[in-house]
Length: 308
Image (cartoon, rainbow, N blue to C red; front, side, top):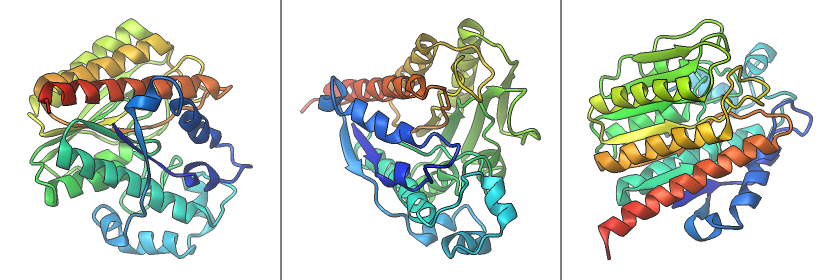
């Protein structure tokens, strides 16, 4: 399974930032041994081009970021402080990895992913919540305008609502935005997705998985040609920003439900990594390792059924 990565996913964030930047390099190291070593093809993420970013973002906002002309309030709202010039190439690589993974599934089907991203808090003309540009929205418009996908379901299972994705794609009938999130969590002011499934803080595996099943039914009622899966693991009970009581096993079952639904429908799946902020970060890394092992197994099953 193709999975995109770049060292800037870690190194493009200051070591003094409160964002847990080491999760990327630790995850790559973990995936480079064991079962995943033989089922994942880790590929260097390319650089995204400006014109692709303009598909979902205000040109002045894009150029302010790319030219390091953002004011302190804009940077503070994004939150990746202290600011470093490497955030610019990092952001372009992160977006480039998502687009390249999209192109993989458009050409070959199956599953592909990016070992970062899911930047669902980025809005049309401002960034927020560690998100600069919205890779989900940009990929949705590329998928529809250039790659022949007529209907796209975006299933956001991060613990935080995909508010930026909802607002950017609000008028795009080809895209269905679906968010399962903790009601009492960031962002304080929620947007309106096509379908929102707010759940109370303290929710555990059983109740959560019932809601996930309902959200999957909603996603597939749209009869999508492709599913975008924002697969944040910040619902873990040990997550510093989550407020849910999910276990690693619960997230495993969640992921399995998503991949099996895509296999049953015969549609490709694009995986965006999403959030994860456990302390220690090892719990987050383990959950993301599960995610990509499961994704690779799903991809392999699809390829095996297809035959030589």
